[in-house]
Length: 460
Image (cartoon, rainbow, N blue to C red):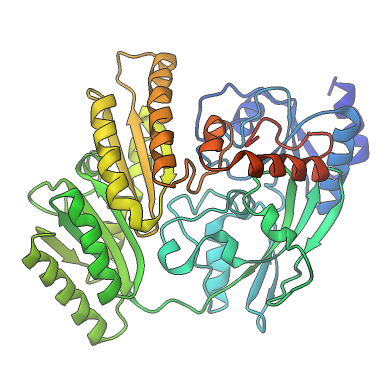
């Protein structure tokens, strides 16, 4: 360890592991965007909140920027370290720290994977209901930093709704205990909610207390083939009235073709332009009958052309694979991604405008889109043609994103639904936040991170 700054850090935080091997720097210095060349100073792996405080105080003294790191599954460049930053990775702070059966809360370290939290809740006869396809690799700290949503927002809301309390180290090295698991706490500003969604720009979560839910009732999964875009919201309107929805997702024929090429089984003999995956409560015969009634009504109206309802857990998993396997099936193409949202009521008009924009601006590109239509969140993936170099491809996509940002502003939407702003979406923040809001955000950061060392260049 030749860098004297790192030698000083090793003395101040002796229990913290420091990694400097090139392979470690590359691994921890990037996220799923893969658009920046990682170049961190080193990787620090603390094991306690005290370690994190010592790291921050060292960083202030040496004026070294810090990039917090969880599972690095983000798609906005929020966990990228490309300019000599110290990456603080929470791999060692990944334990379940406590369970309270009366309050129905689980206390965990920030590095624990979402799936491990779900499994721990299940062991106590409860559930942590926030869920998405990256559950096995994303971390709770990262979920909190981006206020992650996922596939069950329609019923359970975002991560924010399930955070009962936080321990948080600010950009000055102070340890804050926020809310302490209280259900009612009308004692001034709730800084817990300021931390949630802050993308590591104010400090680092070192412990989270999460509310748990009763175990979900038995569910079935329904896959529907939808012939036209305007029918999607009609199907949703009927399903929302007839069923107790857990999730309502959609994807296009192009998305399905990529998943099938990746090993999934075709659900129907005839390809349809759009598909819906809906999961719903089916704990009694009345609920199951309501699902059949809903399907038959949509079929008679011409809003769906085919459908299947799961009859086993294995079949439900295979139907979900058609939706959850999309991102993995596209990974080898290094797609350019947009993660956007509008009010649910604005979805039909926005989708019509967006469809026209994508057809006009990407006439020869393979564009795959899907999303959580039940909460207004759409994912757009543009695949790079083989003959086009990466730099030219991104440049072309950025031009289209400017048009898309303007369209979102027109419809009152957001350029980032659930992956944060990071580096990728920073130029478009003003389309979602006013100048006054952004000025206040800068002021808040200046208070909690006066030296500007926490994830600099991200968001603001």
